[in-house]
Length: 625
Image (tube, rainbow, N blue to C red; front, side, top):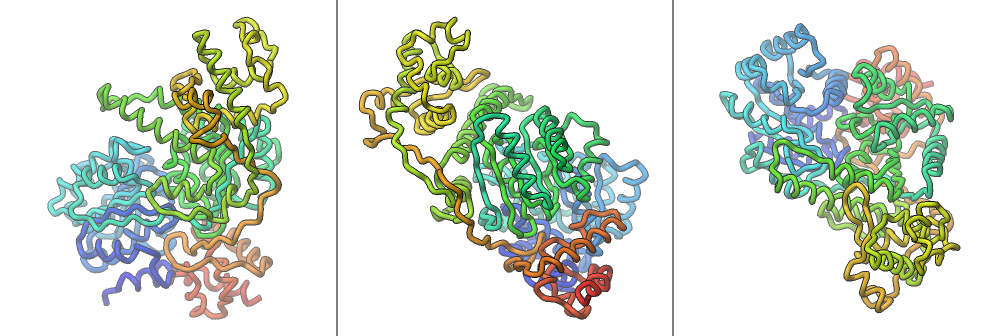
């Protein structure tokens, strides 16, 4: 008897209905159509090719090949699928020759439904031979934005996927999936993969269960203290802290450990063995905090990440939203905190200036850097805006959004409008006086001059003789920096690119000095004061891979904790991450539905036949007790 996609979704994965867009994508793939799907993290992209993979294997015996960029992603997905009873494996550089031979034999024998492949493995003639003989029923390209040279995470190996497709005796339907892609990147994906009249999906980027927060610590010490306090306030929760440099990762991880926080680290400077061990400690909840560069995380499907902290500003909103989206993957409420400081922007500007690409000519490289600078500029706008943070993100990705979400630090803050025209005039006057002397300096030096610093370098360069020297000695440094940032955002000051980003007046700044107005109005700064208001309840969705509806609110915390403890015991015995057993959303649904029989247990969201058989008796015993 041939199972329908709905049967597979329910019986294998334990979900009663598809999430938005999933069913259309599944049906298109089964009808032999190409697919281009842009869906945010946690929208359930994996289910879009996993359900067709099972259906096609049952109907035709064909193989589904999934091209995936990271080894961690493959291991995570394969482990989770095996818990559901799906015959899956992977091919990558970590496998020995004998292990790779076993996978190839599994493909040839028809024993595997689905295989994850690193793009570099597609060059292997042995893979092409067994895949061609078996028959590729579907080829899925995960993280498809990696194929675009204009994207934020370009990988040249992705551009060879088309060669593998063309070498197959019969072209399979091709499915391209990604979480973030502008129109230019979407067009690049379709062209580079040779998609034919694809079924296209551009899902809403909104993640209602995520709470977005931006804070501006005045100093490095204050930033460190804020990270530690934020994590200590969430002592039973799991989170990731992203830093822009290896050094920052090392120093912050050491700091958290000194505060008694079980943290580990991940960056490209560590040995492969240590990276693998540290990642395992995090996935298996032995370390509840991962401090990492952006080398960590793509494809990590750890569903119980409760928060993401960005210690430094990312290079673009694409990267920020992808990294922030690793929180709350099972639909439960989660927090995303960005700590902003202008110095971090300088670091990103420096990195953009160091960009090199052997495959691009001088003009193309210059255009790439220009695009990267614009993406950074939009990231800074997000970090400094007083508008709704969610709306800023959604509009960047071309989606209309209401002006108020009720679940971000700006919507929850009480802002006071402060007329900073006089302070702003003092800042631009200082920049102008320096320009008259043929000098241009960075924001830190501007602050020192205005506050009357007695530093030796200020006197040596004669800055203490400027008419603007010391005229803001009573104004706190953070306020002056905030005014400078606002002047840059408004286009009244220009920040130069390069190693030493100096400030200069624009035509708008000159006009402001004359008129004391910006677009006919005084310069007003919104300043948050008082404690934030309570957030509205987030309308999260259940199911890490699929499922629809809201995650039930847990009213019996004692029962929920007993289920969590049981899940932990089972995970330790099997040596798998806890979320491989059940997600937090599934445990919450158990608490809400209170199943008493094996039949009722199968009605819990996220409980399929294989998991019910493996774990039903143990969880029903706790529920009965």
